[in-house]
Image (tube, rainbow over all chains, first blue to last red; front, side, top):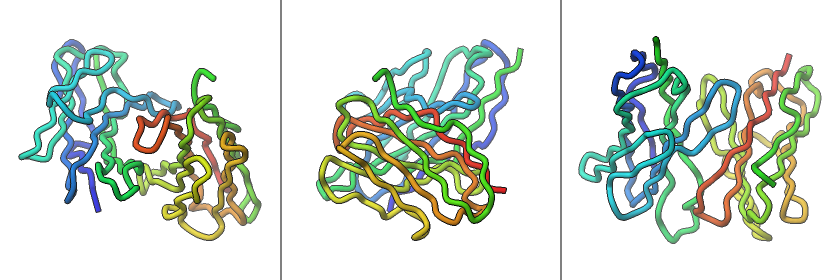
Length: 117
Length: 113
């Protein structure tokens, strides 16, 4: 079974600083990878996804992530954060196979990003 | 529709009562998912519907939980004889097909007293 580890439960940063939110996964088969963001009292919004192709994926709001197969990582980065980026961020995977199970999202525990002025 | 909608947005109930949570997926999306988000367990998959196929119920935590999807569109998640540990945010998502990107609704926040 696949699993997702988000190493940092909370990441405080100052406005305009760069940030990296870490995500590692384990799976015996290939996966699709996702980052979702959840603003307070809202549902999950897709930030970006990696399905295949270029390992550097660009998403909304200036975020990007890089898929590293050898390190089984999919870290999320932003060069300069804003107060409005304060939210919880979830890394998720789904299996890439033909066995019919490539739909269940397995989520990490989430990382709360707090951007301070 | 513009996105996935869920109702009610908040539900407070007494232990032992039954509750129904509703999800309206994005128009044309054939796949529908329910997840639960709780403090202790994070985000967990509950159930998946795809077209007319038998649903995958493997994530339902007990037989008090059930779900149905009528006409391939709206879905209802029912929790019978609610317990305090059922308190959580229940999220619905839909996708254009199996393996497609899942788009989430705002969730229903359930509190069992």
